[in-house]
Image 1 (tube, rainbow, N blue to C red):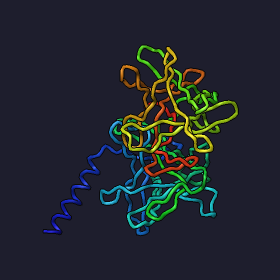
Image 2: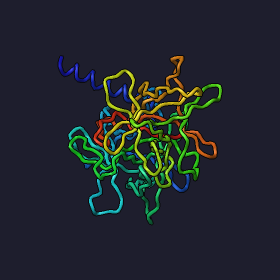
Image 3: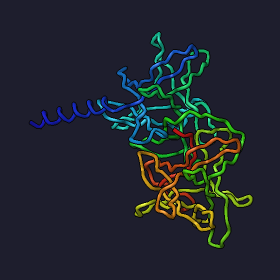
Image 4: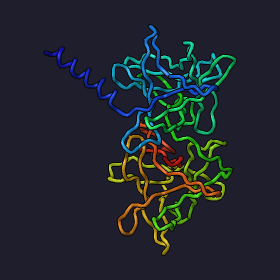
Length: 335
């Protein structure tokens, strides 16, 4: 009876995995052909590698390796010193490291590597003969394309540890960049349905007003950092860890002191900015209006591009300037 129960559980998990609307992951060959990306263990057995959508969240999807219907993490590991590139690997339930490869039409297995860092984003490529490099995409059943990238939230080489394996960066599927606006600092605004906007500002304990902007790191426009700025000083904006129903959005000074982040109403009053609902890795950040309704927040470039401002959770507790945070606040392309 026990064995029958375990078999039923296994079959259910396999069926659930196949029924989920996973996105396929492919390398895009220079000829335009799409090459499957697979996990391959030491015995040569292959496993699917997929992007995992969650209800309401396609903007920041986990990339997972499926073994017997169970999800296993895919991470970018710390450089072993033997290569200038960063290895992308699966990690099974026993902590074993599984190769991730693109499979060419002739059966050749191409390494998947992190080949260059730009701000908080590491570009990932399949490396072919003559050092050819092919981009990696997630493709939805409807044909929507997302980029597969390495993402770092910590400037240190060690981003985290999972199943006793140290890793350098998360692997995520994120929207393709639709603009490369040269503006280094985007405005952050609350948006009303009738087209009005509210300024988003930070306020310190001395009453000073700080601008809140979305800032590109280097020349990457996949994820913009949201920061509070006053003069030459730039400090991070985060969602705090707490037991409150809605997460507090605060700027965190270098000494750990907290600054309120508010929307400024047209009459000069200040409206709360909160993390309202969570969908997978994403926490939706809204302005709480005087009418109790929630209003979206956008980053707006000087040439008129709009990005969503969201909280992004790594799934692990993070300390920023001595303060425990629940999520990082970023601006990213709209879905």
